[in-house]
Length: 617
Image 1 (tube, helix red, strand yellow):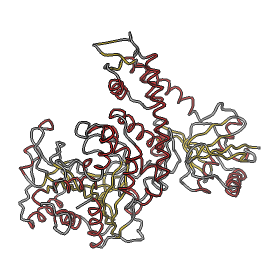
Image 2 (cartoon, helix red, strand yellow):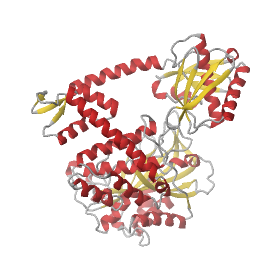
Image 3 (spheres, one colour):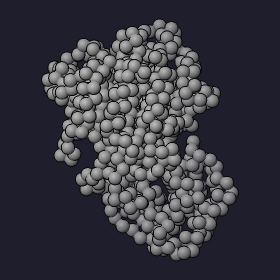
């Protein structure tokens, strides 16, 4: 079956089991400042997993587009992606382990669905630790499932290899919580045995959790049955949930491997990427099998960038825009290794593959091309400047420094290029070696010296910059700084809680406040914001300060969007019952002496960001 059938069969199966099908949420989470992108199928469902009733009921299923950048440096093997699709189904306090595990096995092995050989399916469960016990319930359920399929299912020992059993226990079969506290629980994972030979560099024996590639994880059932409390202890949840995830790309790879279309279950050789590979191979005259890492990075990053752009992100040096820029930059670096090929053809092919299931991709086609073109031109300009700079100062010219038969790249220059343009030293070495007849090597000693110097300067600068964002601590700046807190809260109340402070600059004459918001403010909105601020000034609210840990401050509802810039203890300023915020600057004792607040100017200061200039009269 092809990839379209895999998606549809999954949704059809769970619809027959009473699940409502919900559409994929955007990659940019709605009203969630804690993460940059939607990282899992459960991400948009957190309120419902915590107990809020979902309008479509207690059983849900979806195909969710996801983006994770934690492992971006690992992309290049068969297992890591930045963008991927997750097939998921959920029980919100309805069914639990027995139904979830039985249905997982049914979909994988029944002839009406994926029709995988049950003798090649292995299961793993939570081994237990000091906080939670061995998941004996899941072991018993799995033994019953395998017995019905005529398979003896003993609990194996990973140290003795996969032949020792059918069910294996691991301590890392545990999910969550996402933060320090919250819902969590054991999980049960399903693996498919490809039968490929074991690579002993990954260990003496093979077992389901081995990284050699013989066993491929295809499904994960998470049982949210505990809540982790602030003191580190666990309590049982009143609403026990099931959160499952099935990696779409891996399943497609297994299906094509079993059909004989590909020799190994490599997702990058499936129909999801094969037509793009042919385009690159034809123009670059390089073969995928000879340059698998470079091909995979290009294919993964290009696809991810297409979806990110389609969901409204533009390249920049901050937050989501920076992630997009990094994806395209790394794609272009690896394109240079392979040689020239037509990016537009590869982008167009990617859009054609996904536009049927994700119509927004097709609708935003021109926008996607435009953003790629802009970033590609930027990269080429930067790369050319980098080469010239290195040639002039980095010892690349004839007669330059040579060590062990290799030309030396000046570490200070390399660090500057990394900081300014994101070109990593190892990429410099590879690109320069590829484009010339010489071999290059980084002067790592000078590189580390430059890096340590930069970190020291950055720390000293941060101490000065974030001493409240002020040039002085005079009475006038203290007034304007207090007014900035009132403005921040007023913006969130009038425009919405998506508003976050992203920068500020306060002098004795005026405040400048930068915040996240997608569109220009109307005159009516500006008037409401001014009125709300001045209303708090007239109330002569008391301003109080408490010193506490950052975690405790956030727990008490204090705004703290620059958490990484603070130490273990922070100042929390509370203005009446109107505002509570982590801050390091000076404030007045009461709002009554601030005067009349006026917004003098409102303008854009970048994609998705606005800037306000305000004064007190």
